Amino acid sequence: YTKMCTACHKADKKFIGPAPTGILSRRSPEWVMNMILNPEEMIKQDPLAQDLLLEFNGAPMANQHLTEEEARAVLEYFRTLK
Image 1: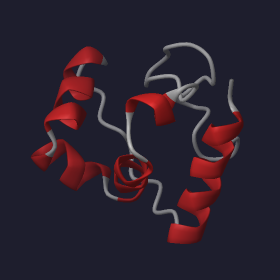
Image 2 (image 1 turned 135 degrees about the horizontal axis):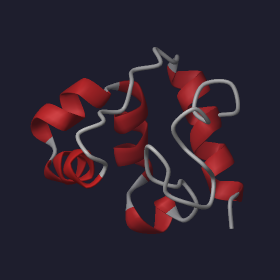
Image 3 (image 1 turned 30 degrees about the vertical axis):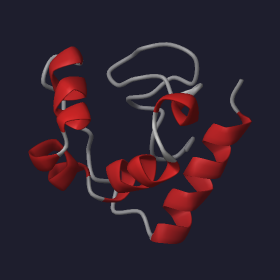
């Protein structure tokens, strides 16, 4: 997370992208994983991802090309945020 995500995401406040704190109470783990691993496809097909794109001034989430294991580590980090 620190290496790949903090340019656009701050843990507890909106920035270029949404804050991940509490994300798992708003979205399923599967949705979060899909957004991390396939942001382009999510923006094309998922209404929630499309709404986020509009909310954040058309700034799409960059594909960081994380492995599934790396994405899962980011998801597990999100679980620790309160």
